[in-house]
Image 1 (spheres, rainbow, N blue to C red):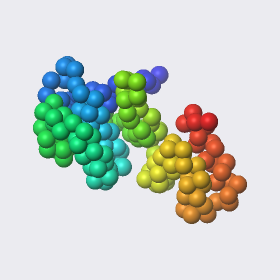
Image 2: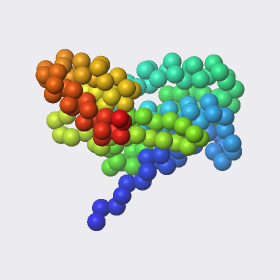
Image 3: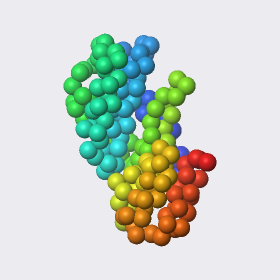
Image 4: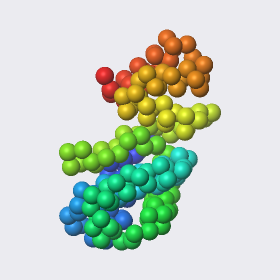
Length: 172
């Protein structure tokens, strides 16, 4: 019998806390959100979804603008070094876990992670994450258009695919 993988929310919290100066202390919402964002970036880099660091920079800079003191809660202010540390940690602790993180956040004070199974052979992971991300963000028409442009599907087939993804994600 194959053991169940650990909950992604537990793993992301564990990784995020590694970046904090005093992990057991109470932390600002900003520091927790940013450390969790870095854990998400590191995890997805290890499963072949690179280049997220630049894309998220504006998000953590916006959070930093709200609370510049949040950096005092971190062990370091070197963002790339912190993410690199988490990449190494993930590779050491969870080398066989190839789940991909679709969304990660702290609604209602609890870490919540939505993830996709490891990429299937022959599937472009970046493409699939873009499609699922559009559906997750409620951009169904953009997701349909994305399928029309990248897979040359009929509108009917593209719509069915988007509906199926929404159902898989538990979105009505």
